[in-house]
Image (tube, rainbow, N blue to C red; front, side, top):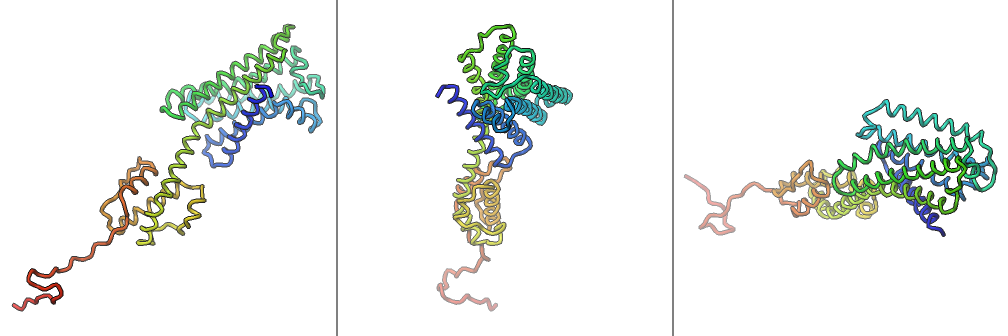
Length: 357
């Protein structure tokens, strides 16, 4: 298997894994925009595979139908990136008129590509019309419009991710934003490569028609998408690490929690989970840990526990759990009313002396 094929399969697997994970977990509005971009990019790159492209054409009985499918998916991904840039702080988000013009230009580019696709002569062979009729006016216009749709999305990526990387704190988020910025730059290189292919053919040159030039173009495209997948996935690793720390803290607090709620059962919020269910349930770990900390603190308050773990609003749940564990057992014997001790000359079991004066 050629290096370009191996890289493409790696990118396809990464993109679909990231997309499925995004759709399988609840997402805020910006997360929903990101998963839409990932889905459209994955669909576009999937249709770009020669085997899948040819199978799609035969299945739908329309010659080269996979070409507009992948290109329109790219245009839609660019529109989704514009939407993402609009809901995030940055130069694009602060210019609603610029976003409206970008939407209009993408819509016009998509409609024009559909018209050109209907006008270009096509054949049911394995090659597509972009390669078969490269250099003709209609195909050159189609190729330029395709790269324009990608350029709009990449320009938004650079305007969004490069400033954000400069503002981000050192860590996975900054590295991810740097990778996304690098993906945008590699994407611009891919656009230049494809425009040069169309222009060189329009000028009558076949210098970029060989297998080496085709492999280079595929490697550049796969590298761009791989950088996008890695850059989008890296910040999510922080979420996985946070989930893991919450899960470990939840299990470590269970013995402490079980003893405390046994002494003060009414502090439990809802039905207490069994040990097996507590370990096997992987959803809502942060909320369950928060409830467990609250129940332990309520038990401490009810029992008059003197040694309390600090409850700072800025402290993470895992740090609060570790503070509770350092505080020791939460169960304390409630203080009783003071009783009279025997006098110095009274025997331990003698009745107390009465004052008869």
